[in-house]
Length: 81
Image 1 (cartoon, rainbow, N blue to C red):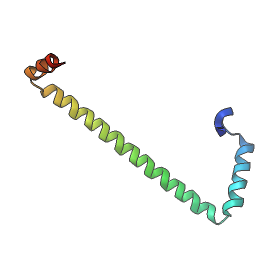
Image 2: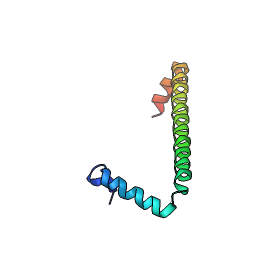
Image 3: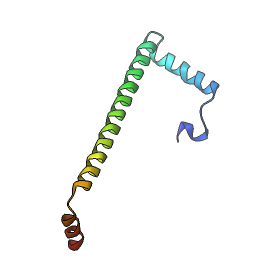
Image 4: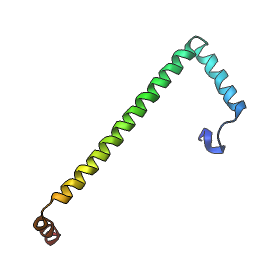
C-alpha cells in the first residue's frame, strides 16, 4: 500500500522516518546521502528538460515537413487508404 494513500505524512511521521534513516546510515553518512540524492534529482531534472526540448524540436520538424509536403502527395495518400 502506498505511504501517501492517506495523505501527506505529518510532522510525527517525518520525525520517525528521519530517526530510522539516522539509525540505518549513521550521522556521518546522512550529508553524503543527501548530496547523492540532490545530485540524482539534478540529473533527473536535466534529463527531463532535455527530453522535453527534443520532443518540442521533433514536433516543429514534423509540422515543417507537413507544411512542405506537396498537395499531390497528400491527395495520393488519401486515395490509397
